[in-house]
Length: 426
Image (tube, rainbow, N blue to C red; front, side, top):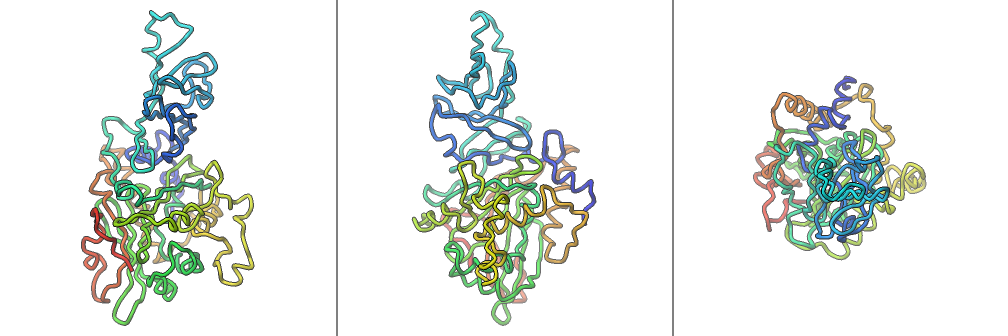
């Protein structure tokens, strides 16, 4: 179990909180590039780390991310006119450029320097891959741009989606580093989902329901190894990297694309579940992309606001007959919704003082410890890891090794992302 004060420290990410300060040392995905696809297009509301912001793309294609509310009377700039190099408040015509700087106040004399003294809080917003990333921290501590492999592979080799998840970010992250639930919750999907089926590793997952976990420190976070029985004298290892504070990557299955996630707090009771697929050595096929868009694999079918069509208001389209037949273990269709339905069922913020953890929760326990240590260290002036390029060039691994070989020794450099080198997979 976890003490109340530690649970609060880990789950609260608003301005001025220890975990909020930690998150603000990292570039976070905040929008899909498709949401700001055209110059002078409609502005988009962004809520991240409990801050209400507005994003827009100006006449020259520059991205802006700033306080949602006009400095004059507090009107939401979502109603603004995006035109001629800036966003104009429709109430009294105040206009701001992409940095949040006021550039026109019609009621003031042209000779006045009033505009120079009006600037909304703003943050850098940049495109990497098909994602727009924001940095909300101290400008003097801004890290290099993201170097995750899925945003650096050639065009056509990656696909990214996001979905609203109506619970705290931490219980979503903890699901991402919990490999033991795959043998139960996702067992019905391993042989039916087109982005998972056909892998030899699926048989190992379903054949050994008591994985042994070994967790080792990694410079950017943790490597979480889940060991299952394979052929005689061998073990099947699934190695999940967790990089501080909120990146996880699912171990690969056969030649299918590699999956992964970011769990980005909207506020303390909601988060964005960002999901990506990529292949390091080939383009994604039309069939694979169609499956991802249809909500297969780690993705979900969503409405226009990126809320899953199967959600808590309709009981996630629970199918008890499919559950009884064994087609889906929980009665929920789709791996993404199987995860989010149970994580949301815990409530907005799960009370970890009531939990009873076991050996297979070793990765979760260690991640909590590292997060707490990093947040408290940052408060003492120690900068965190996970935001450097060397931390981000990482892969997940699925491998069969001799029983007498440690997984760290056995994977060697397979966990290091290298352009054009295939993933290590079973």
